[in-house]
Length: 258
Image (cartoon, rainbow, N blue to C red; front, side, top):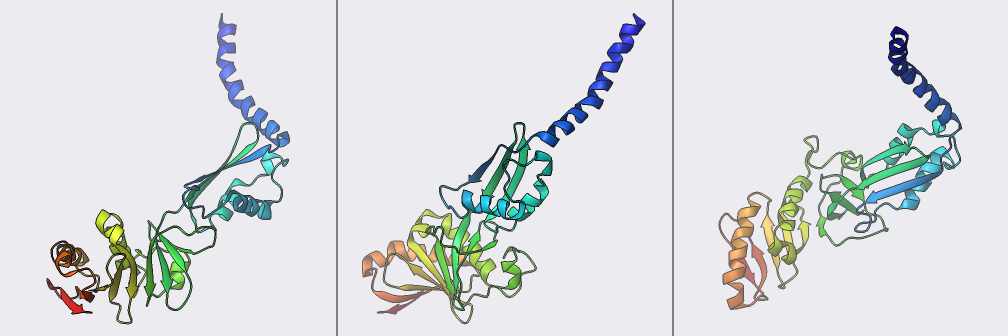
């Protein structure tokens, strides 16, 4: 009886010792059978393609399929994928059977930025800048004019970060976020332009006029006043009566006739 009891006690110990040895020896001969890539939101934005991820992996690691799984450097692959600014995060892991899994989460763009100095970018929902690429051009609010794109932004620091100085993009981000979440303004306002004085003009889709917002300060109040003007005044005088609607002054709307 005591002997049986000792054997029963020994079995878990043997299991803990032998199982790691078994899997280590198995991984030395098991090879990668395939690669499974899943990209979140690929049907909507398509900023990063399956082929691009495959080429990135193969460029650093060579051909993956057929390699022993213990030669696959997961951390290096994840580091390489992090160089794709269009990805918010990625996860790489091997499963039993030798399948290399790549789960990639794309960034969600909220606006397109076209500085007067040149270049074209997207800013995502976290304020991170991405270069515009020709893979896909989603319909977004376009921001143009006197906009400074700093090196810090191009290196992946969010425009919302406190280290970003002397940039109007933080104010523009909150303005666009407000517009996007309001059904009326999202449908009405198309483009945003920043002039040489860092003041903002809004270009509507309906009505042949420019809306001068001025600074981004109190933009919610300004747009609330403009909505009342749209609801009660323009239907009476006509949407093309004015060439400029100025909201820069506190609690005032100053219009310039065409």
